[in-house]
Image (cartoon, rainbow, N blue to C red; front, side, top):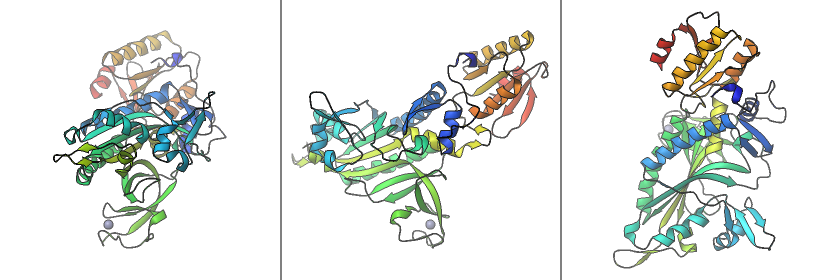
Length: 411
Ligand SMILES: [Zn+2]
């Protein structure tokens, strides 16, 4: 992509009305734009990152047998009345049409997926089924203040499992947990899994996937020796205590952001929608459901919270909007022609590159913007670099002078 074609601009200063690092940097660098509190537009650079995160999630969900669908965001009120969600969920966005009909904007999709799967499933032989989607969700939040970490409209991956019994659900949960940890790892994050009490309707346990960050909204206690982790809200233990699981490690208190969760829904929704299958003996069985969420836009914000420095964002390679940020300095024709050659060579190799080809923009400005945008590798071509190219890693700040052939070989 040519920088000169990009319709967005970076800002000299971080926006004053944003408090969190993720919002300050993402708005300043032109990745997102705030429409109102808790609602953000994704701009070309931000959308490229979001799509990469979504594709990582998609690949891992497909590996464990997920089938992707795309469900409506606008739901008839009846479905929510069937499950009592209409009256019990205070963050549910409710809409009245001009004909006086009531609708809800989805904050989750059990109310849509359960009757949908019911249409197609008759026998126990049709189970298990794992269905997921990546879609916008809506919550009538009173305080939306952490940039894209807590919004009124946000991107979410939600998967629903339908199993014949609890043992099958637990078996699948273990697979889903592994897939989740892999998703977060591929995004450059280490997640800890807490067991927490359920949400509004969960009859059983729920699991939260937490990433340590100062911008988080939860306090957790985790063991320095084993996997044990618990949300401080419900913990009977405190920081410094001996780990109740391994009896060896000590508990450490940390601020964390919830990037994923799993709810064991039991047969709550299958019973509400009278969705049953007949087992081998012809007996009615209500499927056990699980709900598995990943906050996709939140995940993007958490990555920025973890990967930045005083100059800007430092994207992990796996989710960076581009692999290379090519900068040509000066308006000398020789420099420009060389940059064009390198740009075309990189494109020809299938490498994602943004070329700052703008004229009459100072070297200082171009380099500062490259730091702010946070692409992992910066290549600079100027009359000073002669027949070489300056190669610099955003993270390590290591600078090398290489030929274009050496750079192509290193990629
Ligand atoms: Zn432990």
